[in-house]
Amino acid sequence: MNEVGVISNNSNKKLEPDKSEIEVKLTKDLKPLYTTLSDLALALLDGTVFEIVQGLLEIQHLTEKSLYGQRLINSEEDMLRQALRQKHQEAQQACRPHNLPVLQAAQQREQEAMEHRIREEQRAMDQKIILELDRKVADQQSTLEKAGVAGFYVTTNPQELTLQMNLLELIRKLQQRGCPAGKAAL
Image 1: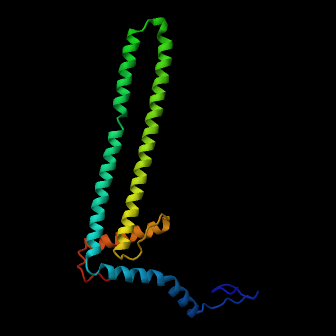
Image 2: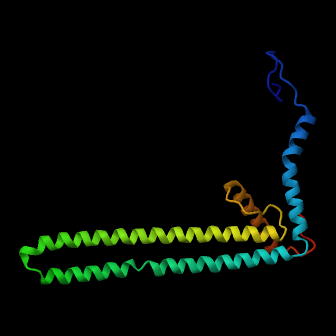
Image 3: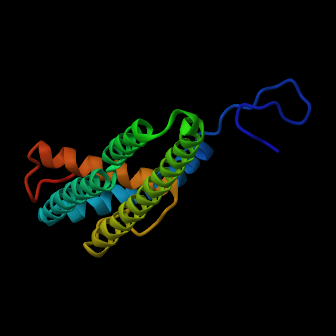
């Protein structure tokens, strides 16, 4: 197999890079990127995409704030722990000394059961939040795809998501720099 810069045919001569092969390979590799950036520039021309991205960002912030609030409301664990401690202290004060070890063992089991329940509820809430955020990402991808923004479509592929995040960051930077509609060339 002949590769540029590799010894070939068991000879000690190094092949010189063939410029046309390199140019073809670079052109082939860069063409999808060039096409995506060109299509993105065209989509940015009228300024609508900037408005859509701004609206999606605001919706995302509101959603994240709401989900964080739900997580805090759901995490009443400190109040539950305090109430259980108070209950245990009162029971221990009313308990006869010879029954104290049995009471403490029962209270320990009750404490462990409550901690387990709290962890499970928190895990379930976290999973719910993650699913909601995943749905929000898919909604954003769909909205940008429908708006004709190059590179956006519904996907869960990490590499494609990273590319989409980079494209969004580019759009936001152009927006922050005051890239006027009609002059959004890349």
